[in-house]
Length: 163
Image (cartoon, rainbow, N blue to C red):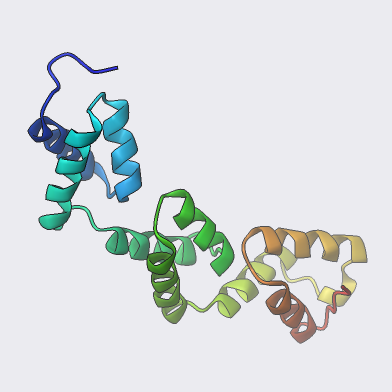
């Protein structure tokens, strides 16, 4: 599946730089992108090594940016952020570091309460039927918040959820 005219690490680097001019990529994402463009594995490896050496490709920087974005904009919990980073090919140790830094900026407990306030829309938790509380709990779990934090948030707002 080699494309005509492609055959060097320089061309792979040039293609990668065009992609990086638009947005950041993880190493794995860039590898996949270059592979789809028809570059050979050796060419891709050489291009990625050069990009990392020059600081254009940095998984930790990328993970920090993504984790902070998912924290502030999507209000995801730490587990969901970890899943997203894993899907982008970020190594576990870098993902943990990025999540920890994002937690310092906007702690999960604050994000959880913000999501809870948005979903309750001013309604008192004790007024919500049990079925809706259960659905809300499932929603919060899917957003990546731990059960313990969800339970605590409901108790603080007087809307106790049973296990």
